Image (cartoon, rainbow, N blue to C red; front, side, top):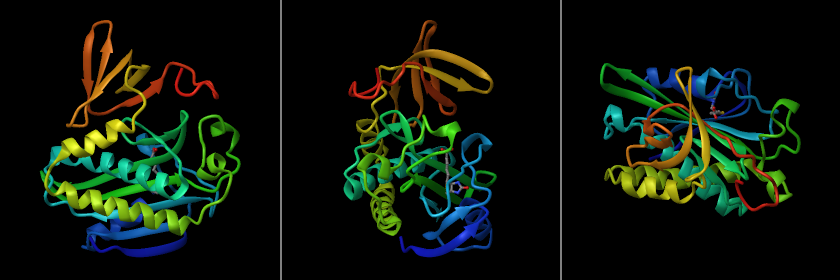
Length: 254
Ligand code: BTN
């Protein structure tokens, strides 16, 4: 894929921008990156806020004609693996992946991914993959200070956001090209290898309902299986909360 990068000081949302360009027929590989977003958004319609210039906020326009409607999920997992690989090579940070598309470090959120698709019936027109990676923040607002972390807080130094972006784009391109062979097992294996949550007690929220259980597995179809007192439940959408408390210095989720 050839990347064509558009840079912004301030924009509403790099995802919204590329959804608009997607409608206008812009090609796959168009990238929007911004120092600041005025209407950055996350999953479940939440706001995504980041101090100007502190983090990496970007989106990639994709036209994955080789994927069916029910295969688009693989892009989120692919992006998570690409970001985790890049973060390890640029910053030496070994992150953990949380289903379906969060990147954590010791239980705190380092990066969020938002995939938005444009379909016409069953025909996939375009997909926008948005990434918000905390890079140089040294402090977070009170509401999220206990649950967020940045590369610079982990590594004790600041990072060149351009270098981090290049590394992510490079590793995403590799994975994206390999996706064309539809070997979802390899991607999901890389994802599972970076997830530290199997066997943990979790709460699962979907459509206003809450389930409690143990995270059993994430299949090659991207679905998560949870072992509950009434049997195994399988979900393709929803949100996980870790029931157990993470205690720093104990070497993992406790
Ligand atoms: C989440 O964890 O809920 C996903 C957050 C995704 C945020 C990124 S920042 C760049 C891109 N533009 C947006 O408006 N959202 C994504």
